[in-house]
Amino acid sequence: MALEVNGARGEVALNVGGVDLVIAATMAGLAAVSTRLECKSLADLFVRLSGVEVAAAQAAIELLTVRGDKMAALAALKLRHFKAIADAFTVALSHHFKDDEGNGDAAPAVAAG
Image (tube, rainbow, N blue to C red):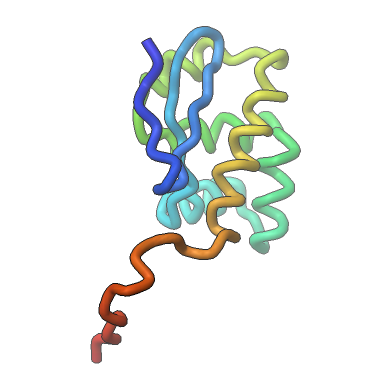
């Protein structure tokens, strides 16, 4: 059974070895992946995730999964899954480079402090 995906929040469906996941490139998740991989820049992180380096793929599945059994997906992980993984990470990361969509008529945000 496929999991519900909220594309407006940057969520992306991913299937690894028959295990359905929903991933999202949250700032906290990206920071955790970057720290684990010792990335020196956003460009380094992007290349490692979209290039499906094995350690990057494992870290990202563990740290960017918002729904689904990430441990079962990691156990099922094979090299043949890496194309789908790269595609999903690229879509999730691209969410950060899009203009925010929402209610243009809403009151402007007020900065704290």
